[in-house]
Image (tube, rainbow, N blue to C red; front, side):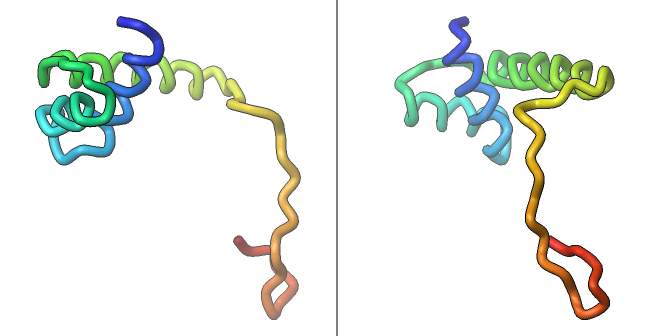
Length: 78
């Protein structure tokens, strides 16, 4: 599977109500036909890789300083 197809399969599997619906969504979005089990397996494999990276404290993207608003007590809030 290409990296782009893996990314789309993971996204479709993650946002749909089921991996079967994710496979249907993937076909609708990109014309790629994958089985329900392939979408499920792909999403789970990517999730496992992300979990391993997070466990190693890997940061995704550059550090960003946020200009948070202050509440009535002066505490910063989103």
